[in-house]
Amino acid sequence: MVYADLHVHTTASDGTMTLPEVPVAARTAGVQVVAITDHDRPHPELDAPVSDRGGVRIVRGIELRVDSPEGAVDLLGYGVRETNALSELVEWVQTSRIERGREIIRRVENELGIELDLEPVAGLGRPHVARAIAAHPGSGFDYEGAFAELIGANCPCYVPREIPGFDRGLSALRESCALVGLAHPFRYPDPEAALSLTDRLDAVERWYPYGRPVDTALVEGAVERNDLVPTGGSDAHDDRLGRAGLDEPAYRAVGARLP
Image 1 (cartoon, rainbow, N blue to C red):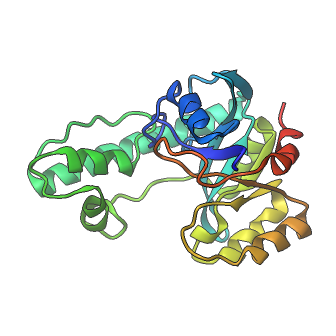
Image 2 (spheres, helix red, strand yellow; image 1 turned 30 degrees about the vertical axis):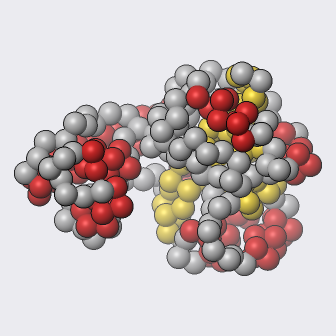
Image 3 (tube, rainbow, N blue to C red; image 1 turned 90 degrees about the horizontal axis):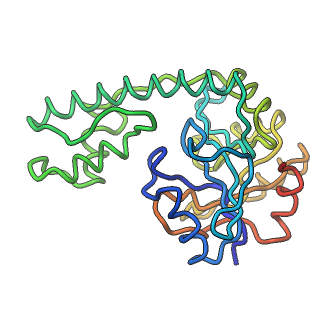
């Protein structure tokens, strides 16, 4: 049984759940603790590093993409407090996201000769664009097809995004978060190289729904070498929580670091 799902997205980025829907989904899944880790921004409606909502402990988190010496990776920050450094970084990233989203929308509309029902706003990501494409009766693409043929990497409507460097991102997260870790190490082209970055981190995502066999010994080795806190979560972008995460004993190590 998953006690803590520490990787969940909402409508503040590219998830489908609103904040009030999170405790309902957690109770349905039997999950007691949820970390809301929206892309490149803390959830704007959470005002404390840890809070209680509907009988569920909610951890204010963030998933921040950074450009590291080993390529682009995602860092997970838990127990986020407001700081000037993080606020400035989030504002810069969100401005970049809005500009990128506007250009992707323009390219899709020109490519398909349609008008999407979508405005470039904070939190916008390619999943929003893919959903808008799939919802348009004249597009001819479903969600997966939109990514595969229009807005995925190397596709005609793809636009690369600007991301902060590893040092800048880590510095901002360290100042504002109780715990900073590497997300989903086996989603990167070279997991071992990505895990080498954990010598500067507090944690690493150990439990994650990859849907394929992974060499967990690599993660466990990093945990031992660098004295890391193992974390995990479902990376839910819908309301199905608890597909991966921590049992209660494993969560105690995380909870002990939170405010």
